[in-house]
Length: 175
Image 1 (spheres, one colour):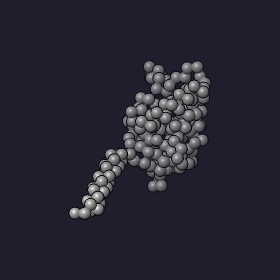
Image 2 (cartoon, one colour):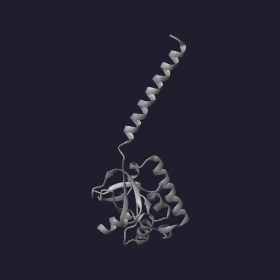
Image 3 (cartoon, helix red, strand yellow):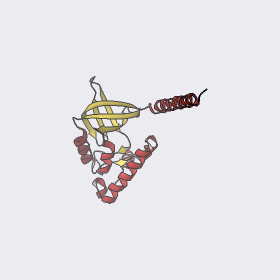
Image 4 (cartoon, one colour):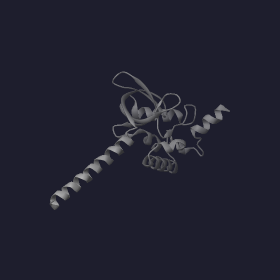
């Protein structure tokens, strides 16, 4: 056999291995689904309702954040800010699960802007670290760093001397 034939056979083998690895990685990462729709309602600072082209409504809980509750300080401002970002606009939602209430837990985008990250950056939501293991390492890092920047700058809810995270506020109200 010629050395040219052997070289091409080796390249073909590498190509097959590369294709196999690409497909395996794609399948492993394809547990995520996406959904497109127009925002028809903003419930609070971390929950929206969208309507897709088939006129099906989906309740979306923004992944990776927890915004102040409506009766908490900054609760109304958080809802208003989210409304300014997404109301009547088309959004893309990337998700892998639903919560116990049936809501889709998703990362929401307007154009290519990560709405969840925008809420943290504006100081109107916390990075929800209780569920950070469900985020990509990149998102975990970006969300945590953005929260730290907002808190150090005293933006939004970080103006309060000791803001109460929503999970603690909900826990106190249950007691």
